[in-house]
Length: 398
Image (cartoon, rainbow, N blue to C red; front, top):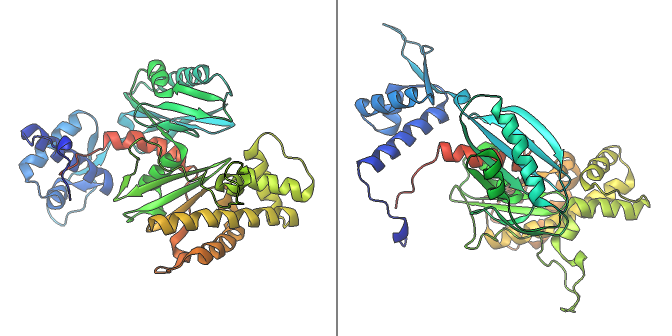
């Protein structure tokens, strides 16, 4: 492996101590309840080092002691736990029509949540309003605010929170991170909904546990994609990776005028499904695609023939894009999130049939390769994970 010289860190005693500290903190977090002796055994650190680090963590309020262990002789061993209530953070998920704001503790537990309408046009005013509202929400808890994680359904640069543009919301050249940091007074982390969903799966999704690599496909009004490689969320050099939604899935021979319906996002998203239902049934769709999609799902559950047909046809196109992703990247698993998982019994057979048609070498069971997300809202939980990973972060060792 080529060594990246720009990431070399001098391993002085401060760096080594910080690495040891993070190892201890993450061990306590992972095991939920653990003794000092067990931490020493798992990390390989001596008892003196463990004692000093644990003492610091207790003093900072990040860890606390409990006498819950069992011992056949003598006094009960002291058990250590992460003090989830010691700090709070904010999480925001911006969707096309509505935005969710939450206050959470270090365990990812939601202490308070609000929903507001996403404002079209004036993005600066919208994010300023969200920042003020979140500041008001977090201020009531009298706890240290360690950060805010934000998932946004737009193309953006995750490093600086700069939004390049969104045709539906009419936002362009907007620095969401800067605005939110100004209003909340703390560090803000921003990513698009596809990558945020992948991060949410990495940290909280049972279906992603023990995986080294996977692709997350977020089906909403459009399609967002996030990739995890070697247990890390992947970002392209310019931060514009994961744009699989605009991939061309059909070509009629005229490069100058390619119809929108020839692109994956236009044929496999919630918007595509509700448009199909409108076409099949003659019932015009509304302006709120998410509400229409939920209504379509309810009709499909009632075996409405037009709704079932719309869902199944959309699932086949979803399979076209997933097959391309699988053929090109070869992930351990493809995790699908969004409202489509509510009718997985209708979606999966059609999608799987299409993926099988396009897969030349079937080295793994495709039935096991593609799975639905079990998370309530992967992008929101990804916004949570943006902050949690900073608190429980780690050094990269080269």
